[in-house]
Length: 280
Image 1: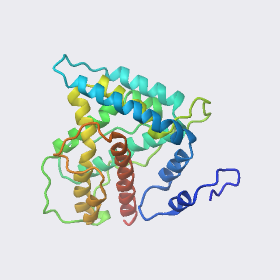
Image 2: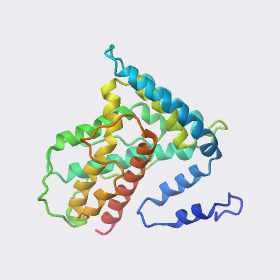
Image 3: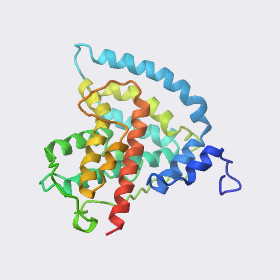
Image 4: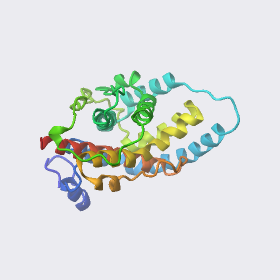
């Protein structure tokens, strides 16, 4: 039950997951997600929008695959997203979006620092929504692909190391300044509903291969987990990934769930490393 007597009374299931720390996910992220789940529009508006926009997404996807001239509008895409987030997305959902940039950048920089290469580190750590005008979702995807490409082939014979013996040079504390205060009365859309609205826009304003790569980038979760698991001596990490087998490329079917599970897994892997680092 909610600890705030003025707050909502959670169902038995929500009470259970609110205290379940079996998965080491950041308490800050869990708190934001629990508040997102309390949004009534998530249970009323989201199912309708997901149905409508899933059909529209598949239509847009099919049109983009036709042998027609390709175009992209990255600036328009990001300006639209930022304006939408500032005015219509709840502060909790916005903070979850900003957290995802930081957590994934930390994971990839950790791999970079402990792979012995001279690869340029990631600098995508937006602290407020307007920062995403410079640190865009397209950058987020392309930097992931660049890092995995430039790190090259992984040494599967590498031995695990103690936390104190690993390099944490580019690991940053998550520092989000955009807390959504004062909250606009129009900021009512939850995380998943917002993503449902964005899907078609992404597909339309990216080149077909850019969008195809972006929605398949989730499958690198398993590859990242295999490498990090080997570095810290925990091979179980790879089995926790929902999105797996990057060589099997998929289309936009079930994209909403795959996107959400990518976010959950990134938070899980980040917090697992935070616990490991604290042991040093």
